[in-house]
Length: 100
Image (cartoon, rainbow, N blue to C red; front, top):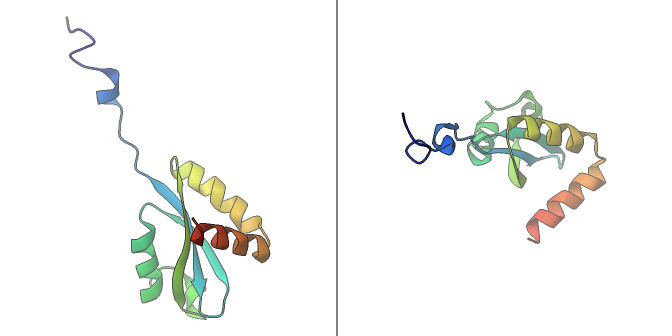
Protein backbone atom coordinates (compact mmCIF):
# COMPACT_ATOMS: atom_id res chain seq x y z
CA UNK A 1 0.00 0.00 0.00
CA UNK A 2 1.39 3.41 -0.95
CA UNK A 3 0.84 6.54 1.02
CA UNK A 4 -0.27 9.82 -0.53
CA UNK A 5 3.05 11.43 0.26
CA UNK A 6 4.89 8.95 -1.99
CA UNK A 7 2.74 9.66 -5.03
CA UNK A 8 1.08 13.07 -4.77
CA UNK A 9 -1.87 13.47 -7.16
CA UNK A 10 -0.26 16.57 -8.72
CA UNK A 11 2.65 14.46 -9.96
CA UNK A 12 0.28 12.37 -12.07
CA UNK A 13 -1.53 15.36 -13.58
CA UNK A 14 -0.31 16.28 -17.06
CA UNK A 15 1.40 19.65 -17.34
CA UNK A 16 -0.69 21.77 -19.69
CA UNK A 17 1.16 23.82 -22.22
CA UNK A 18 0.54 27.55 -22.43
CA UNK A 19 -1.52 28.85 -25.32
CA UNK A 20 -1.69 32.41 -26.57
CA UNK A 21 -3.98 34.54 -28.66
CA UNK A 22 -2.01 37.03 -30.76
CA UNK A 23 -2.39 39.88 -33.23
CA UNK A 24 -0.07 40.45 -36.19
CA UNK A 25 0.03 43.69 -38.16
CA UNK A 26 0.13 43.26 -41.94
CA UNK A 27 1.90 45.68 -44.31
CA UNK A 28 -1.46 47.19 -45.31
CA UNK A 29 -2.24 48.03 -41.65
CA UNK A 30 -4.78 45.28 -41.06
CA UNK A 31 -4.62 43.05 -37.98
CA UNK A 32 -4.65 39.25 -38.07
CA UNK A 33 -5.78 37.34 -34.98
CA UNK A 34 -4.71 33.76 -34.27
CA UNK A 35 -3.73 31.32 -31.54
CA UNK A 36 -0.52 29.38 -30.95
CA UNK A 37 1.48 27.66 -28.25
CA UNK A 38 4.50 29.69 -29.48
CA UNK A 39 3.45 33.04 -30.97
CA UNK A 40 7.00 34.12 -31.86
CA UNK A 41 7.57 30.94 -33.88
CA UNK A 42 4.13 31.29 -35.47
CA UNK A 43 4.87 34.92 -36.42
CA UNK A 44 8.09 33.77 -38.12
CA UNK A 45 5.96 31.29 -40.12
CA UNK A 46 3.61 34.11 -41.12
CA UNK A 47 6.59 36.20 -42.26
CA UNK A 48 7.93 33.32 -44.35
CA UNK A 49 4.59 33.06 -46.16
CA UNK A 50 3.76 29.62 -44.74
CA UNK A 51 1.48 30.65 -41.87
CA UNK A 52 -1.87 31.78 -43.27
CA UNK A 53 -3.36 32.74 -46.63
CA UNK A 54 -4.28 36.08 -45.05
CA UNK A 55 -0.68 37.26 -45.58
CA UNK A 56 -0.49 36.43 -49.30
CA UNK A 57 -1.88 39.86 -50.23
CA UNK A 58 -0.05 41.83 -47.53
CA UNK A 59 2.99 40.44 -45.67
CA UNK A 60 3.17 40.08 -41.88
CA UNK A 61 5.14 42.99 -40.44
CA UNK A 62 4.98 42.85 -36.63
CA UNK A 63 3.71 40.74 -33.76
CA UNK A 64 1.84 43.52 -31.93
CA UNK A 65 -0.15 41.71 -29.20
CA UNK A 66 0.02 38.46 -27.25
CA UNK A 67 -2.18 37.24 -24.42
CA UNK A 68 -1.51 34.09 -22.41
CA UNK A 69 -4.52 31.81 -21.98
CA UNK A 70 -5.14 28.90 -19.59
CA UNK A 71 -5.37 26.31 -22.37
CA UNK A 72 -6.15 25.88 -26.05
CA UNK A 73 -9.90 26.01 -25.46
CA UNK A 74 -9.58 29.32 -23.63
CA UNK A 75 -7.36 30.68 -26.42
CA UNK A 76 -9.95 29.72 -29.04
CA UNK A 77 -12.70 31.46 -27.04
CA UNK A 78 -10.60 34.60 -26.67
CA UNK A 79 -9.72 34.54 -30.40
CA UNK A 80 -13.43 34.44 -31.31
CA UNK A 81 -14.10 37.41 -29.02
CA UNK A 82 -11.24 39.45 -30.46
CA UNK A 83 -12.24 38.67 -34.05
CA UNK A 84 -15.71 40.10 -33.32
CA UNK A 85 -14.23 43.43 -32.20
CA UNK A 86 -14.11 46.48 -34.44
CA UNK A 87 -10.66 47.44 -35.69
CA UNK A 88 -10.63 50.44 -33.33
CA UNK A 89 -11.09 48.12 -30.33
CA UNK A 90 -8.31 45.84 -31.60
CA UNK A 91 -6.07 48.91 -31.91
CA UNK A 92 -6.84 49.68 -28.24
CA UNK A 93 -5.64 46.18 -27.31
CA UNK A 94 -2.42 46.81 -29.24
CA UNK A 95 -1.95 50.21 -27.60
CA UNK A 96 -2.53 48.81 -24.09
CA UNK A 97 -0.11 45.96 -24.77
CA UNK A 98 2.69 48.35 -25.76
CA UNK A 99 2.21 50.53 -22.70
CA UNK A 100 2.57 47.60 -20.27
